[in-house]
Amino acid sequence: MSSDEQLTGTWVIDPAHTRLGFSSRHAMVSRIRGAFNTVEGKVVVAEDLSKTEVTITIDVDSVDTRTPDRDAHLRSADFFDVENYPTITFKSTGVDEVEEGSYIVNGDLTIRDITRPVSVPLELLGVDRDQNGDLRAGLEGKRRIDRKDWGVTWNTTLDSGGLLVSDKITLEFELSLIKE
Image (spheres, rainbow, N blue to C red):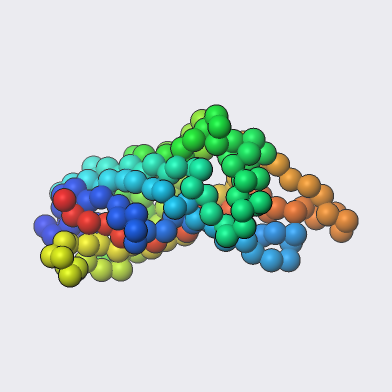
């Protein structure tokens, strides 16, 4: 996402090759991973990188941890409350290149109608044409957040005194973008 002429322009998320996921500690001894299967978004890379715009919308009902009972619990009012808050959104407020191919995307993340600023580090994996001639860009990154900051507070205490679900959640970004 540098000011390189090849990257300047409008890109859309390819949902078939993109993973917006998360991981969390469970029972203080294991890690649970999940993802959202329905995402859409657009990146408008400006010549002045700081003016680049990123918008992402996630259909929360598409949450998938490979365990239907857990997914149903995540959709409930205990966690995402899909009935009242069907989407998670991100809208950038600025992009900084910290070194070649390494960026910080600053923006507002909205979960359960609570909006908080976050900064997401992303690495550009490459830009190339696919078998159909479409220009693609790949980016990856991770960011830890505290789920309580967005009103996701459900938990239960274990016999040891620990908690069933960690408050810290790692957001995982594996993005495939196609230039329009």
